[in-house]
Amino acid sequence: MTVDRILPTDEAYELLGLAQEIADGELAPRVDDFEARGEFPRDVLRTVGRAGLLGLPYPEADGGAAQPYEVYLQVLEVLAGSWTAIAEAVSVHTLSCFPVAAYGSERQRKMLPDMLGGDLLGAYCLSEPHGGSDAAGLATRAERDGDQWVLTGTKAWITHGGHADFYNIFCRTGGPGAAGISCVLADSDTPGLLPQKPERTMGLRSSPPAQIVLEGARVPADRLVGVENGGFRIAMEALDAGRLGIAACSVGLAQAAVDYAASYAREREQFGRPIAHFQGLSFMLADMATQVSAARALMLAAARLKDAGRPYSVEAAKAKLFATDVAMRVTTDAVQVLGGYGFVADHPVERWFREAKVMQIVEGTNQIQRLVIGRALTRG
Image (tube, rainbow, N blue to C red; front, top):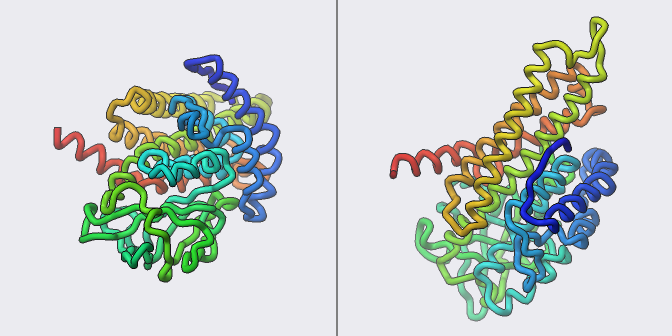
């Protein structure tokens, strides 16, 4: 990737170098095969975990690497440039570790070393078939029965569904609205927790989501994360950070598209000269590169607010909105630069184009991001 970076420590430079080494040596040679077969790359994620890249922003005492969020996001960006599904999987897993890391009991927190080391893969179960954007209106219920919670309902669009070792399940334990939601941590072998057939998706085919049906699934009472009816706060705090993860994935795949399109334009000749020398095309490449740099800057500005302990929810929404829209525009233009070759699977811009679309949807659609930003402006 042709990016000049300013990182806070020498360790961060070494970490990014390691990520690039893994991206070039482990991810890039395998992505096309896994995407073509639609196979989930669990062993690849174990390799990423053994390299210490699954727990980057968490404390060393919990098994993490104690890295600033701005460093973690740039690692995601590097991974996404080679295999977007892997970068998205790292982002979702990092999101899935948050409830226990931030609100877990002492007993629950004993799981963190295995979570952050990659031995246990996580899933985050908030969305439902009839309430994707209306998280406060979720219908999945958890009823207390002695020393257990009994869960009934359906979760939708669950990344790692059917592959995860643990599931954060947001469910209704009280009345209507946000105030009646709790978070329950369930193991994958919980009776009544039933992953469904993976969805047939436009992109990220090596990591398709799946529904999780809960048919009287019984979870020990001590697996409640945080306090009863306090789950909505956990969900929203996790999503703020998760939106930055999706912004980083979007910047990474967009940068890869810029690099590939520029390289192609330098080599492809028409009318006796490289097409990069035609002003119309060179201006398109210039706009693509500028948009990606702007998206990266917005993402890192939000990350630095988070690292400083300052409010960053609105800036995260801006970063997710802008970076994902940029990824869609840039990959569209990359296909155009390649012309007919951009429309076939022999070149990766076709895959990046398909992957960019889902980035505008996951972790809150871009319409929801505009709602978050607009409300902040109108409330003052």
